[in-house]
Amino acid sequence: MSLHIILFGPPGSGKGTQSEKLVEEFNFLHISTGVLLREQIEQQTPLGIEAKKYMNNGKLVPDEVVINMVKNLLHQHPNTPGFLYDGFPRTIQQGQALDSMLKAMNTAIHLFLALDVNNETLIQRLLKRGKELNRQDDVNEQIIRTRIAEYKEKTEIIKEYYHNKAVSIPAQESIDVVYKKVKSAINQTINA
Ligand code: B4P
Image (tube, rainbow, N blue to C red; front, side, top):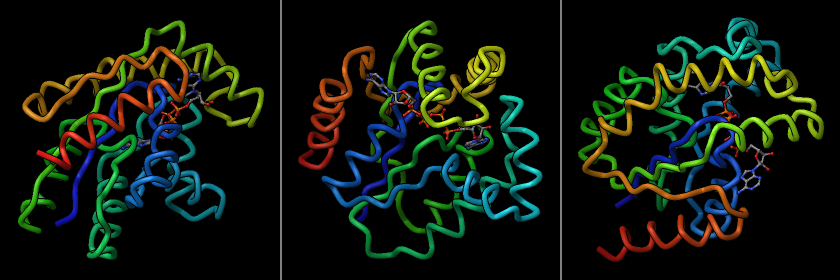
């Protein structure tokens, strides 16, 4: 049976960073809607051209776009040890769509890991990445603040939606310290 784990948190909380380490250690399939969207932008597909308008302004991309991307991936990997959702779901509608897809596969979310970091640290981390990688949505503090506001308005509530699967992880410390906590929560789920 494959595990289904959501890695949740505001922009800059370490979702992508922790996912990389988890994928290496547990061999999970990494489903990052942010990565998938940036690939579409890179390839200048119609989907990518549309998504770019939202992403570069710090706004969420429309639900149907991301839901379809995830749906396609779920059916392509029947034998993976686990699916790691990074940055998805970001709205209640996306959460409901994911639950229906999993129900149709006779499974459900096993663990919802919520990374907690304060706003000032988020902004500093993203501005630093903006300088290092020149990611368009990281270079401007106002766009970063819009992303955090979108998170507060549309995304944060998802933690309540998955409350019976949720584990909060204080994620202010170094990448390796946070990883130890994330890994321990996953091992507890595996061994339950
Ligand atoms: P994402 O690609 O998901 O990007 P993100 O939220 O900024 O976080 P990410 O996971 O990449 O970065 P991390 O915190 O690991 O989304 C980008 C955009 O795509 C969204 O704004 C939206 O427009 C769109 N989108 C994506 N999914 C969508 C969906 N489902 N619905 C609608 N729209 C969607 O790392 C940030 C930085 O912090 C890194 O430089 C890292 O090195 C550093 N860092 C991480 N942990 C640290 C630690 N413990 N200590 C110090 N630095 C740390």
